[in-house]
Amino acid sequence: MVAGIITGLACTHDASQSDQSSNGTPLSNVQQRREAVELSGATLESLKSGGTSEIILAFGEDGVIDFAEYEQGVFAFVACMEGYGWAASPGYPRLAPCGQYQVQFAPYTPATREARGASLTDLPSWEAECNQRYWMGLGRIWNARHSPSEEEEQNARYSVASCLIEAGVEIPEHPDEHRLFDLFFDEMNAGASVDRWVECIRSVKEQQFTSGTGIEFAP
Image 1 (spheres, rainbow, N blue to C red):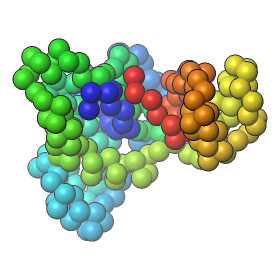
Image 2: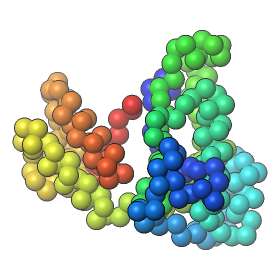
Image 3: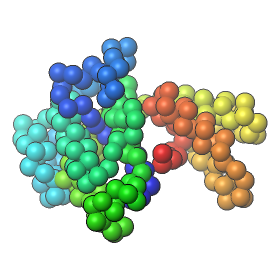
């Protein structure tokens, strides 16, 4: 992908340093939910058949994925992406209160692609390889138990709505996710500027780790 990549996953090389964000900011004031996840036999089999790396498979041998293993697995994913020339966006990866790491990669530049002798078709195949080996299975398992709660999503949506109203956009004060989603695409499909939407959604997600809208923008 030439555009930036955004995904919700894990990161922090060493569990002994997991009280800091990627840029060294203390996270002691954030109550992360870090409970281990038990794996069923069917889940283990799905990992084995999905092209998952031996590193990740080894984590699940005892039937449990804990936070330290989650971190290590995602850093393997990040290292894979960096090995192909991507770079994490400033401030990422970062740990959300729900215990889920968020990773965002900067756009893959033409200069990087030229230096690597890569074609446009190489990029999605490289991304898919890293996802399949290190993240797809692990992320599905972890995020099923470590995602923002509905209350957190709702509070974020209301914050987006408040921001938009202050910016002059006519929307309900307390819209649900589907209503916000529809309003955004109605404006976009009508050819209207969605700059205010982009600004509000990005601002709320930066502060609350989710926008509650289901809408993502590449950096």
